[in-house]
Length: 294
Image (cartoon, rainbow, N blue to C red; front, side):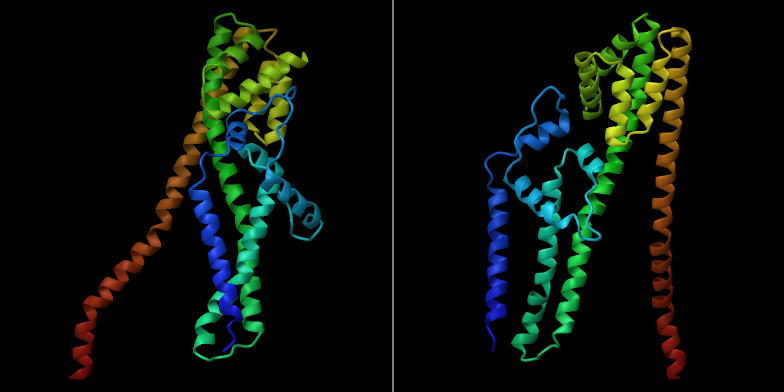
């Protein structure tokens, strides 16, 4: 019996357990990604040095980005505060794990003395590797979608705050900055960073908001920038425009939540109908068997 697959499988499992134990026993979390996620860095500050995983991932990215089908969602990763290197390293590690799956699956067959054709484990491994390779893309897409929805909810409250500041005769820049300082969530911290950068670079605050919208693909922020561009002429009109956009945004968010709830309810219809059919079959089974045996 060939023991090489068994030894390879044991080594792979042992390495995986060692990595898992190392992650569980880590003395302190990585504060760099957490701080960049909660408060975006100002352009005047120097970016922190990438860690070891990020450097390895960037090395892989430089060699794999030219392959077909290999892409990095930089906008979504920037919104989530994740580095492209760690993203590519995770994709490569999952793909490598998928290629090792045939070895683990083939162990019972090898022990039983049954030899499989080479193309069976090879095809199975390639399929699993491709599926695991695209899994991080789907996860990042869903996380970015939820983050944008969270930002839209925070922006609805931010619009009301800016409108109240403008009604109190605050200037456009002052209203935007003071309204952003009220919140403590990550959307408000993103707004604070953009407005602080605008003040340091001597640019209009609505221009900084428009750049923030383009950088992280936040189309709901464009409305605030467009409304505040005309805030220097008529404060009352701007107040009404801000309150109207806040009400419209709240209505859009409620409509989206209702649509998601309806979609979730529809997904439960098929399992419920299948369960009802199974119950009916179980109830009718004794009678049918008795009719057939008589």
